[in-house]
Length: 271
Image 1: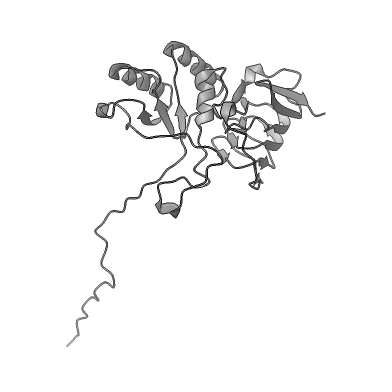
Image 2: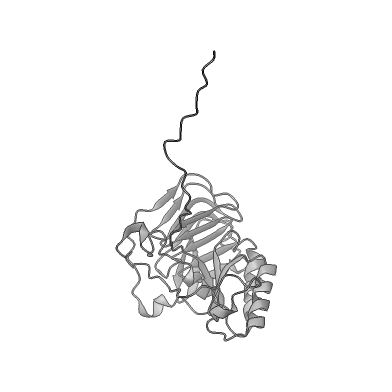
């Protein structure tokens, strides 16, 4: 007679619970200003030179200052979506507007200072970690305001950068984004078209820059950009931007040093 072996009971019972935890993450908060038609013209100019600028980024639309009605907000969201801007949230509207036709409505958002310390409580607290607390608000203000610089430049001292630089020992390829809010970024290679470098400090590229470089992205006007060969789609220092067609022919293809001077990006040849 053959013995039948009964299956052993599981050592642990599978969990029947779904775990939720509050988290905060950095997002790019776009702040359209009036007139909306003029704001869209500036946005279209940016997208013409950098069509992938908003791709794969977490983006919230803040319409607090516009006082738009629900239908106009819906049209604004539709126009942005038609331009390939993927919107994860909407703020500055009545929470009762929540519906399937609008992105999720977010409340109680705030700008985060670069030197703000996280609250006590570790990752279980609803606070920003060191890598999360740097947000894209200053970039959003530069796009929205055209000529206005980051708000933090007018009343907050520029943060001291004490973090070690981020060293990237390979080329940065199209579609890749390097994000280091706490210090400098050093790239031992080239930055391809369609790639992004976003640094709280300066950016050093020991190769050709064909993509987009944003130094001092959180209000540090002392930040600088160095590269061996300039063919960039976009340069930004301290929230002020220069697109490809604004780069002088005599510095294109050369080793250069870019800095912010009187709210204008100045590019100087290094050779």
